[in-house]
Length: 358
Image (cartoon, rainbow, N blue to C red):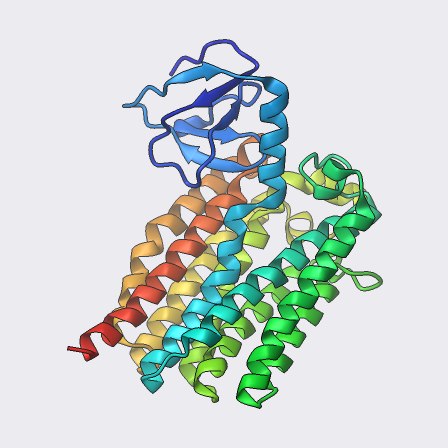
């Protein structure tokens, strides 16, 4: 595909996009195998069978727009929504009831808590200088670190208030305790003086936090726990952890300069690329184990349909693990796998619920 020489281009048609984004800086060459980057934010596949329509637009406005999209990270919020949906639907399947009011409050609270996590991450990374080359950091964009700090804290308070509302409705502090534990783990990951993410412990903390999110959502509906909720918590926790794991490949030099010992810094990019298929495979091992032991309904075999997305992620990282410009969007490929895996879990839970109503 030949692209006209221009500082910036707008693609009106991009077949099979991963996430909506129409910004493509020409300084980023088209990726091998038809993949292209839209700067810092998204990732899509441009089909060789389709020629996009291109128009010239202002470089300054597009730069600003793409940076803000990258800073806000809309696709990232699927990682907040999926655990709550999975836990709630599992409880509906096993108990026969679903409180829509509690589900709605929990979904809003989960998004607000992830907003806090993302904003505070920008704030604390600005303190260490690791984000000095990250143009899409909200702190760098606004030049106002205190503002981002307090916006994050407001999101935290509002999110916890939502969970507190659930607690008061049910007169049971279990859900609040689980979510406060998740928040504490989130702070340990990035906040001073702990910064456990800088010691390479971010992935275990992520796995535990999002697994607990599934369990908390389940308990909010069922007022009890089950082996199946912990099993699905482990699956969703691992799928979400892959997003964090894949975010390190393109920033090894910045991490080393800031003293951050991420798993990819410790293992090397090749070691991380070799480990990734085992992490992806563990999701399907847990799924099959739960099916064989009878913890999961047979309809969850639908989740196996997400395997091609896992293979695509592993192949992409294996090919470009040591090429920051080409691997920088691996995180968004991981988000697609996490989203597809989570949605298929939800559909697998909804199917027997729907059939039961007939």
